Each structure stands twice: as structure tokens, then as C-alpha cells.
Length: 610
Ligand code: AGP
Image (cartoon, rainbow, N blue to C red; front, side, top):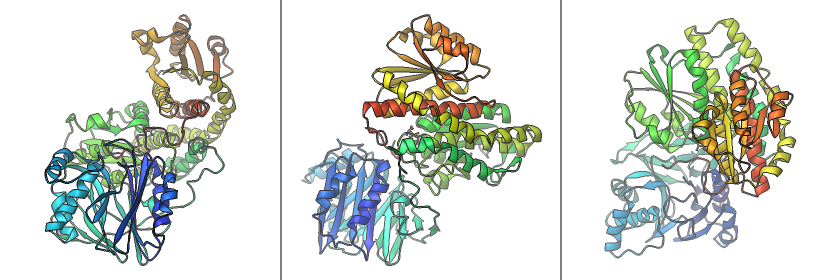
């Protein structure tokens, strides 16, 4: 996944494009570049590494240039080197691209046979040369682009500038996101609205197959067959400035601490008195009476939110719930009942994850009802859904998902309660009792946050271990998976999450003094069972750190240390409280190890490629 940005208008473009790339840095940050068109010449600056590495070289570009394109990369083809960084140059043009061209090798061979010389290993450079060659026989760029696109297989949002055409930028969208911002005498584009929303809130979201000619006056749209299309303008809402660190060392730490506020905002948005606001939960457009099966599709942490949701959806709604990794679901030809009898729920913070989006499109084609829980309005998954629940978590900048997980679990729970309320599967007394407890959750979250200093100390003892195990039962087994993922992705330590009851079926062979084991042990109905699993571990010299009630004498006796976690009756709320402890543990271990917590190696915030 990469980020693309562009500008054409009355202002100097370099800083606008640079700042746009910084806003999209979460999409990839292993190399970056900017190209400007100035007095009939295209000048390019690109570097490997972070976007800030561009500063010295873009200072040498003509600062009065008013047309330009920019790109920040997450490598898919070729190492993150300067040569492989975008923009890519061909004869008379320069091009940027987000996505994967699956048939690039055969296209490249065709160009090599024509004597074209390549500077990079990328699929993108192949597209640049294809367009340049096509322009020699089809001088009109839009027609040339249409001819090239017909030959591309895969996903792409691309943009290019041509040295002999000073006042236009050409773009195309297929699979990867692309949105155009319409200003006064200036036009922007980007992978999402954050690239330009501080300049204009008038947006045109391109659809798959769209091709556009962008000028300072706006854009002209065609479909891939050359038919002109109307431009549908969306006025987007955005509160700039909510995405800075506010004094925290990292965005991730800020976002862990934001969780009480996120829960309060969610409660206020979806709870009205002692019942749920069914319209706000997006329940009005879904025909629940038809639904026989529910598939939840997601990736990574969002997948764990879905797995947590299964524990409360099934008993509350009385339907079977299949939770599946989107990357598996999309290729196994799942059994999907037509006419809305199957619902597919997509959970995605970014709303742009390619695997999850592909599942939504596939399920839609099969006649399923589509519901999504997302954090970015107007995102591709939201726009493909019949109905969507917006998470209200605010921008999540840290690549490791924290407040988004909490928000996803809570939103899924409230949505399920809303459906139960709508179908009469929950009494008003039960609902009132849950809502009363929900309103105390922010306070308990504040208490969970108080464990941070304790965890800082624990992290300083554990950060050098090469392997970790996280265990739990019920929803705690999913929090164990999430805790392992957090630790892996930001500290680069190998960690596994396991259902505690599974240890004796193999993983207990891993147990010795060299592998710290975090046992998630709330006072729920699994407590005794999990405690006996901990005893089995201790009998083999295992080092267990219990995450639970620090006043529990048995926990203190059996564990090396108890990581304090407040206790709530409702297992869903308890799962959210337990998550704070594993988030802090991963964060502070990573800080001790000196990794790049907000932008860990090899990762990106939104995985918009397969
Ligand atoms: C979680 O910490 C990771 N950043 C990653 O697993 C993420 O949850 C996954 O890529 C899904 O992203 P999405 O919620 O934007 O779809």
C-alpha cells in the first residue's frame, strides 16, 4: 500500500504535496518522491527512507512550480531503494502508482523487446513506459490512458504528468483508493481525504474504472470505455488538528490513553437514555428477519475484534457466526446464501484494507447484505456497504491498532444489543443494566491506565526475552492473540497467543524459564479453569505474569507478578479492560528495545494491497 498526492493550481505546489505525503505516511514510509512540471520540464526528487529525507532535495526544485505529484511507498515489487521510489520517469512523462500490476512481467518483457531501458524493478515503471509508448501513437493522454488500462491486470490508482501539457494531470482508479479535492482555482488529489482536507472539503471519490483529467478548474471524468461521467461532489466533515501527539512520546501511547474518551463518545453517540439509537447504529437498512448466517471478515487486530464479537453475538442473536480472515475468505468460494439471507460484516479501521474490501465486493455480488464497522467515513468499504457503523475513535495514526480495537469491540457489542432490542431478544431491564454498567466503563478504563507505571517497570525486566506466550480462555483467549500481535508488530519479539486449554495439546512443550507467559485472568467463569492451566505451567518452571485483580491472594501466590487490571461483571467490558494491559506491555517493551513504535519496520497502517 502506498500514498499518492497531487496538486495543480495557483499556489506553489511543493510544500502542499510534501505535507500531503506526511498526512499519508501511515500508508507506507519506506521511500518517497515528488515530481513537478515547470516551464516544460519535469523535475524529480526521490529518496529511500522516511518522507523527511526528501527535504534537502526538494529544496533544489523550482519553488514556484504549480503542478506536481508525490508518492510515499510501501514496497511490493523491489527493495525500498531510491531507484525503486516513485515517481517513475519515462519519455516525456512521470508517473506514480498505488497498487499491484499483476501482469507486469509480460508487459515489461514486451517493452524490453522494443529496446526500452528500465531503471527500477517496479511494476509501476512498466506502466510509465507503456503510457509513454502509447502517447507516440495516441497523442491524446486520456485516450492513451484508456488504451493502456485495458491491458493492466490488478489494482492501481495512478497519476502522471506530461512535459508538453503544463496545465493538466491525468489519473485513473481501479481497486486502490483515489479521491479528488476541488478548491478555488486549484485541484488536489490523494489516496484519501486527509491529503488535502485542510484546503478543501469538496471531494469527488473516483470509482473503479474511472479516468480523470485534472486541471486548476476541476476535473473531467470518463469511464474506461471513453464515456463521459458526471462528477458527484461530496462535502466531507473533518476536524483538523485532532491527529497530533498532544505531548505524548508516540501516537500509539496517546491513542492508548484516548480509550476512555473514545468509549464515552461511542456511548453518547449510540445510547439514548436506557436504550440504543437504532438509526445511529445503522440498523434501519438491514433486513434481519432474512438473515440465517453471519460472516465477519477482517484482518489483523480487526479480525480479533470480530472473534471477540462472536462470543456475544451468538448467544444474544441466536445465529451462527463465522469469523474469518479476509485473505482466506475471499479465495475459498464460501457458501453464501442469496437474497440477503447471509450477512457479511466487515470490520476495518481504515476502511481501505484490500482483502477486506475484496470480500465485501464478492459478497455483494452474491446477494449478501453488507454491514461494516469502520473508522474512516467515505472510505471504500463504507461506500460499498448497505449500511455502516462509524467508530468515532478519531484518527488512529499509530500503525499498531489500539483505540480502534476497543472501539470495534464496543461498536460490535452495541450493534448486537441494538439488533437484540429491535428483534425483542433482550428485556428492557437487561438492557438498562448493561447500559448502566457501560456508562462506568470509561472510569474503569482510567483505572486500567493507572497500571502503566507498574508495566513500565515490568517491561524493563522482560524486554530482552526473545519469545513470549499469551494465554486466556473465552474472550481472554482473543485478547491473548491481540496481545501477542501487539508485541510482535512493534517490538519484533516472537510472541504467540493461545487458548489456555490448548497448552496441554502441544505448546506446553515450549514452557521453561526462558519464555515469559502472560495469563489473562479476569474474575469470570473461566477463572478456575485458567488458574489450573497456570498451575500446570508453574509445575514446569514456567514464569507466569497474571493480568487480573492484584488483590487476589491466589493470583499473587501462583504468579511471578500480577499486572493490575480492574474487574467488571460484563465479560465484554472486561475484555476491553484486559486489552489495555497488553497494549501497555507491548508499547513499553518496544520503547525499551528502541524500535520505531509508531511506524514499525515492514508495516503500514492501511494494507491496500493483497
Ligand atoms: C494491527 O495492530 C495492525 N495494524 C493490523 O493488523 C491491522 O489491524 C490490519 O491491517 C487491519 O487494518 P484495518 O482495520 O484498517 O482493516
